[in-house]
Image (cartoon, rainbow, N blue to C red; front, side, top):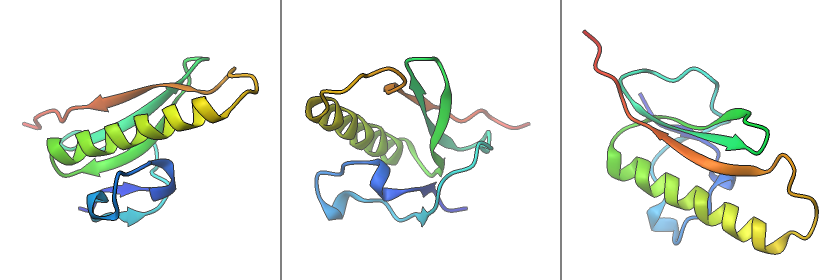
Length: 97
């Protein structure tokens, strides 16, 4: 199972930092035994950012890269912030018995 995300949804510090992945918009299904990232906007809508992340260090790299993009976008924008993303949620895997 490969991690799924759209590279343009993140701001990586370098090309070397980008994890191997399937370049696609992740669907809302998240395998319970894998890490995944969700975004939450000001209206409390959640949306998938990355699915099927292989391990915690990779999940943390993706989380940090998304936060960098949010910060960059926030600093560059002077328009209304209503509906913009305000949180990145790292979901830990659950054990499946």
